[in-house]
Image (cartoon, rainbow, N blue to C red; front, top):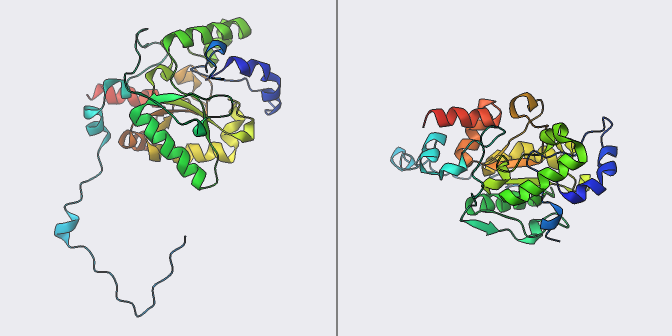
Length: 265
């Protein structure tokens, strides 16, 4: 979720946080060579009430799909655990990547893509936010193994390996390679991937509503002991609406929820 261009704005990013919060990014953003530079009216008191649906009709409405059912029908990579210990093959690249219109991209970061289902859900979410006066844009989405390799090495060179491993993922260990993950950010923080985004109106909207569109925030506050990565309020991963709903209700860090789900399959 980091990008080489972030290094140039590092001082500005730190100025937004009194604690000097580091630029972050469990997955890292694109490396420099990859830059793709109405309220309804009340009815009259005398109006006839709409008849309730008969029980026979009501029973024809299918119940909401469960996460377990969704998991049985979903591609295995949709719910796959990807973390510091469990990596993707170096040659893994989704076959259904879909380009996302640049109108949804943060300035300077065009040409993003995600797997088809995730891309559709992402555009739906960003459009819903926009309709509510909340401007959110994608800064980074799918990244290949090779792209992550270059990015990770850059941050080792800049920060040292120990700190780089808190902020960026080694190649193969980034959720971005799945094609179902994106860094979603706002103008209010200069389109930077910084922790104060979580306290903005846009960051709070994303945290409150992303599950409605099938997304989960992978790296929550105080989750580093579990995930190995600092808090990333911008990093969302598509896991489908049924699973996103159950994930939020579980109160678990995403990786633990996915581990539990895998154990039942």
